[in-house]
Image (cartoon, rainbow, N blue to C red; front, side, top):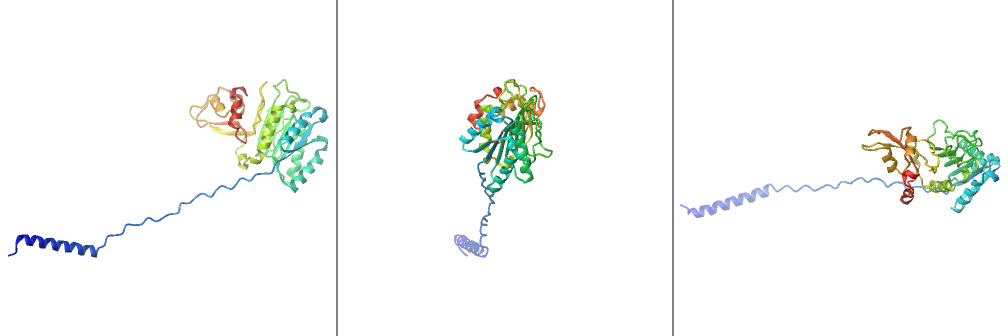
Length: 312
């Protein structure tokens, strides 16, 4: 009879042998290796094409060397800023128009036209001539144009009219052709008793803003036209003109008021009220859409805060 202690040792040896055999027969499953998956990356945005400097054409009104001298002063300021800016009599309108078209065909560059009185009418005529040649006009600014001035053609990308609707010599309330998709802004200064037909084009503040706009033109992305809302204002008396390019729709959030939206966008309260045909204290509903005037390029922080919203 075997010694019990030997039996225990023997049993242990048998169990160890069986375990080793099982390990050989059924090797451990290898751990699955992670499969590297390629994470798709968005293609880099196409580089923004820097347009050449705009070519600027300014037009005097009737008896321009006497009554439209503001066009000459503006031309001098634009030239000093590094732009090509020439002044013409409106009587040479179609001759200059042919020159504008041939110059664009030879060397395409943004076209800017600025006209006072009959010079404003001339700016629209040349825009119509360019439209027939499928040539875009980047910016047209007319200052108290003649009543006979036609509509803004569809090839004009940005249009601004600064006028007095009660003016006898000017007063052209110019509208856009049906289907117009560009930027449109109209500023009626009839309530400002200090402005007349023969000094409206001489404002240094308006000149400064025009130069800023011309400077921004080569850097403005084309898609900003998509959501442009036309603006039409009667500027309150003794209020400086701020040349917004168009409007944009802003959704109302809970707690918003007309005043808070004006402050957030750094625009005067009256501009919000007129854009939306609402009283300045009108209650707003969340989800409602409010039209707010805007600049094509955001204001620099220092310039934006230079004038408090309530004092524009």
